[in-house]
Image (cartoon, rainbow, N blue to C red; front, side):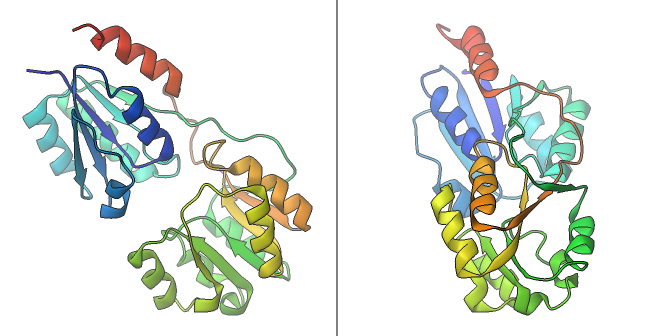
Length: 253
């Protein structure tokens, strides 16, 4: 029986890791939250994709049934609840947990806030249109921004659930962009200019999340970038280190 690796998360670096270990003699299970996330992953012989949101009980059940040698958490840096649940499940089931770290973007001139409520508070103290690039999960927070229906344009993934969420919260259809990244500096500039945005709100998603392109675009378009800081300083391993560890442990077996 092949050793089992369980990778959680549909991020771009998670997909790159799947490809990087495609030739290893392991059975790889990948968990993503949505069917859309599953469709972005290319099929390979040793891969089983599971598209469902798993709570603690389901995670523990999976660990008990499949007994993975490694559990790799490749979720988004801001998916704090999912990461905490995976960590708890691994602790309870004595499974080897590895966090795939995404480097933090550092360059540029921007305002950093601690969380979404602080971003809302700041936006209520200034005037001007806003371009929101923080995803669909926190759209409700920004309905507390004064005149949000008029001021906010937003960019979300091209998923029906994301679009419906935005519409149900009262965001204008003409102000909703549904697109899959990565986004170039030029495309970000074009969107900022289209919506006449004085502010751009984003997360510090690092290099793979196009953070540098957002910093440069905001500067060139004359918009102020507001960045939601990461909740905690995570411990884990980088992409190259994880690939090297897996190859050392499984290559040639």
